[in-house]
Length: 74
Image (tube, rainbow, N blue to C red; front, top):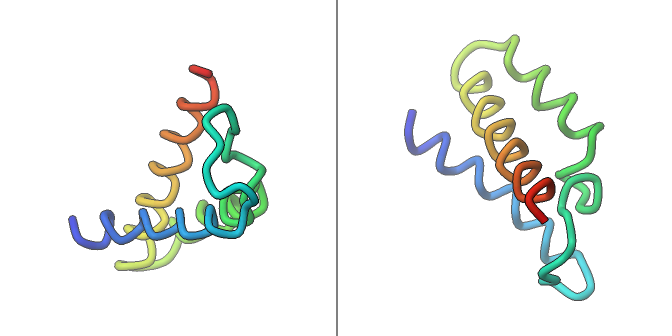
């Protein structure tokens, strides 16, 4: 289960689509395609499926919460 949660961090690959790839003062929430509110609704929907999909949903939502905390702290 830990590996599935760790694999949820692969969602950060969408940062490679941004130009520039890294910008220190940019909030990733609602900027990158896999960090949009629509994508988060899909991640919440994953919670209602059986394992491993609900675990993937938990991992993705934890990732979004940590990114949101980062945005708030900026």
